[in-house]
Image (cartoon, rainbow, N blue to C red; front, side):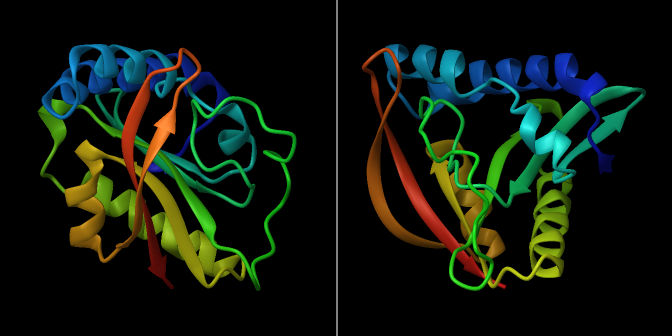
Length: 173
């Protein structure tokens, strides 16, 4: 595992689209899965530039990615909000876990857990006391097993008007 660099963006985008296309249909309707695959699978270069995004490579191919953010944006696909880039206050706000994807051939090997460990350590080192995230349904079992707790079920409105069930979760550092 290593920190992602901007040159990784094409591979990260490909992994996100492949993973979303494989996983979302198992949990959502066809329309929801297609919308999620379109809007939730765009790499966020800000995470890479902030040095908070990680990749796992096998034979120079990115097979897992994910990271944390010190900024206000909760998830990709939410549409641009005026305060997305606002730096969070580590004393009063949780850091965000963002954009976790693992290729289906590489699940259940501890790659996502290793990324979560790196996220927790990075956020802790930056002074944060907790993590928060918006989980899509495919990710909920991983986050639960890691120790995240559900704070509320919600519906995420995607830019095309499709609503997707999501679970807000938190983890105390």
